[in-house]
Amino acid sequence: MMIIRPIETKDLSDLLMMAKNAGSGLTTLPANEELLLAKIESSVNSFNQKTEESHRFYMFALEDTTAGRIAGVCGIEAAVGLNDVWYNYRVSTTVNASSELGIHKQTPTLYLTNDMTGCSELCSLFLDADYRKGNNGRLLSKCRFLFLAQFPHLFHQKVFAEMRGYSNEEGISPFWESLGRKFFSLDFTHADYLTGIGNKSFIAELMPKYPIYLPFLSEEAQETVGKTHDNTRPALAMLKSEGFNFNGLVDIFDAGPLVEAFVGNIRAVRQSRLVTIEVGTAEDFDENDRDPLIIANTHYQDSRAGLVSKQALVGKRLLINKSQADSLKLKTGDQVRILSLRESTHTKTSTHSKISN
Ligand SMILES: NC(=[NH2+])NCCC[C@H](N)C(=O)O
Image (cartoon, rainbow, N blue to C red; front, top):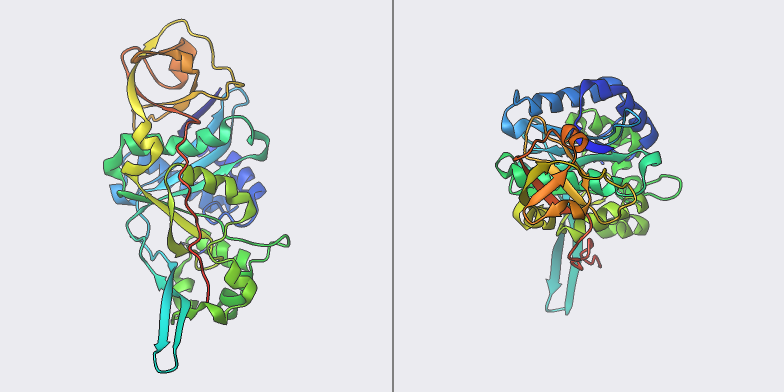
């Protein structure tokens, strides 16, 4: 059975293996044992309520209970930029106009901002290649919305996700080559890794201080502003279908887009609802069922989520069997939050405000 639960210290070796397989570009999951352990501990302390609410970091693991290993992780940072500084570029417009000469010039301009300070971040999503099938990806990504829906007071009203930016087949980010490299004299992967291990003071020290007129960058770099990496497209499509939108902010290193939503507007949050558990004789979940319900218990420390068949829902009662109840830490009479894994109201929005000179 595939279940979602808070990550534990015993998951370190599985997590390290996954981080190594992920390669570069996943800033929040660097393949560094000490750092991954620190992340796990930070999450464990958060779920144990040993950390102040705004400093909490929640990491959920997707566990294959049959294989006895974790197959993926995802995280929520309660608030970014409160211990250190959170950076983005805002894609703004500079206008120069001369009525005398009849010239009106709009120049896209990047401004360094800390605008997301205090907001909650969806981060660290990674699913092992062997498990990229069936319902796993959606379960892993969407379980976070049920947690947000259950505990909105622990998060900022605005949540966001930074999408990995464009890089070509050789792994080169044209935006980094045209801008970052000139100031940092580092490869993108190295700079990205340094951010991931929490060493961000070099950004303040080396980042260019003045706004950047976009036409001063290479054409290739200009084209990648607000563009995601090919591998990140499915994740972006999912977030858009949940109501996330591009807000004009991009990553300072690779210009990947940032998408945001108000918690109360997220489809999964709005459509999730509470029903009551009844433990009895029910069939185990069929992994081939493509249209299941995600169910999450309403516990904080013992948070669990998994999938059940839609047939399990009878009015306001959800019928599950003993083994499902045990793995989801549920008993008859408990409330659970449910959500259809697949229904979605597609909002057609672009990640890309048009950038032209
Ligand atoms: N791709 C990157 N590592 N970008 C660096 C900045 C990342 C993030 N916005 C922060 O301020 O920590």
